[in-house]
Image (cartoon, rainbow, N blue to C red; front, side, top):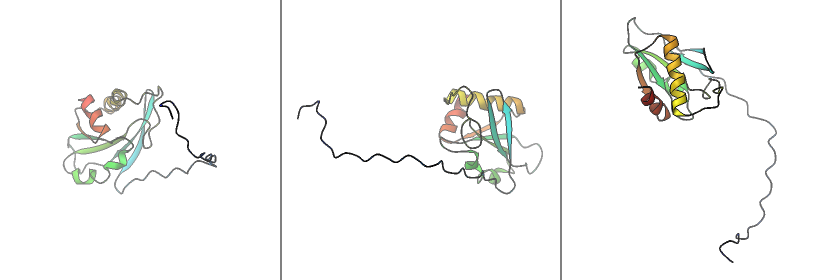
Length: 142
């Protein structure tokens, strides 16, 4: 056998076509949370929040990692409810947020979407909490 010959292998049987797509699971909302859609230029973001325990708490925005959603923050937000006014965002194309209209899933594009949300909501300056991809997005925003 030369270096350009492929090793012989037994034929692989074809994969049968899928008969249907799996059903999407309902978006879970923990007790005390609310979930809303925010229409922004080029994307609709899903934002999860908890009402603050008292007025005047500094705002915080939680940003999930790759393949995650705002639901990743549902256990932490109640622990911080007497410290910050928490919101968690589903990045474009994740969780319950629509895909970006321009198809750009880069860190910079995610940062621009989050900044548009913060500007529209008037929540800045804000504490940014990010995990994995969310940490990169938070760093780019900062």
